[in-house]
Length: 442
Ligand code: P5A
Image 1: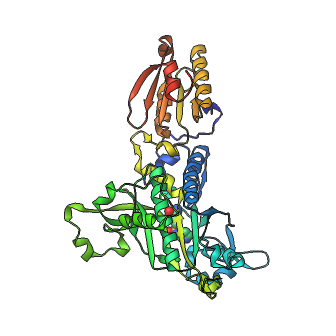
Image 2: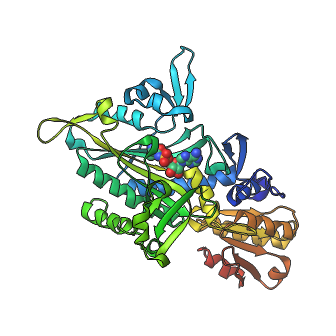
Image 3: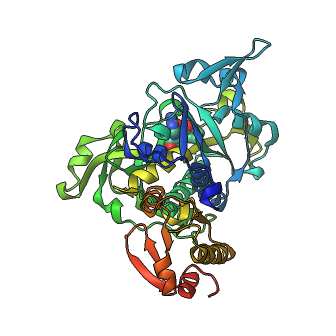
């Protein structure tokens, strides 16, 4: 992609409304545009990162056996009256009337809707376990939308819903999502710690929030230092093996870890003082087991092996992809801008032409661009006529993992420079070696 044809509205000044670094950097790097209170458009650079985050989530949901669907954003109040949540949900729910004066709402979550789908089709325990998920926009009329996409009113959510015959099955489903979340966040370069959490308006008796430690986090959290060095399960994890998955969950739930609401001073006192981590955190995921909270009032039941009807046991599992983009920036930036982990970077390489218009610079850049693209790399080619200083500042701000810098002096020696955004390390290499470095033929 040529920067001259791209839409990257960089801001030179720090936007005054942005209180935290991720919000500032997302605005400055032209990733998002605020459209109203707690509502944002995703501009091209931001949209690429959001898509990469969603792709990782999808891969890990699918690996854990969940099936992707897509439900509407607008829901009928009738469904929510069945579960009793229409009144309970309160002011966070955006209520709407259609032209027939019917009560509608913009979905803040989808437990009712997915339970309606389930009860319409699934009648036997033989069709279980079942886990359906979607990635869809939600609206919550938050009391205090703030920090950009971190706490917005309209936001993207991956929400999965599991259905099982009994508690044991539901616990196994919960465990699969738990392990899937560990893998998901690690792949994005994040260290997420599962912490016992309050269930709030979703309900239920068992719940974990997945928390990224960050000074700007909205939650106060408490955990054992051991979490900072626990190994995350690999891609070869067998999600069909309940014992293997259960053992991983046990390892990850044994040391102390809770959010503020669940904090237990007596248990905390037993953690050696030098192992206590009391910090701020960002909630990037939240999983719930709620048994028959929705299946019972909504009549979602299956015939069991005993020939009798059973209300299914359920759970729901949320991740906030839009919040995650901000959380990744909170965890990975420096004074000059964003430092994207490779897996979610909007492009792999920033190719910088220091003297656009110079025949040799243009030729070498064109050659490198074509070679990188042929090797499957995503490249943002800065072919603009900006001064080099401005180009370097932009490249650092938008945080692509690698910068390849092509200037007339280097070319005269047959060389170009590469810079690693994270370490700042620079190397000068012959042109053929640079191609090879990024997987292209020399
Ligand atoms: C679980 C899936 C639920 O809604 N129902 C379906 C359950 N859980 S939750 O904790 O309320 O939300 C899940 C995740 O969504 C993100 N999130 C937000 N992101 C940005 N702005 C918001 N206002 C917002 N509210 C929730 C969080 O990542 C949360 O963990």
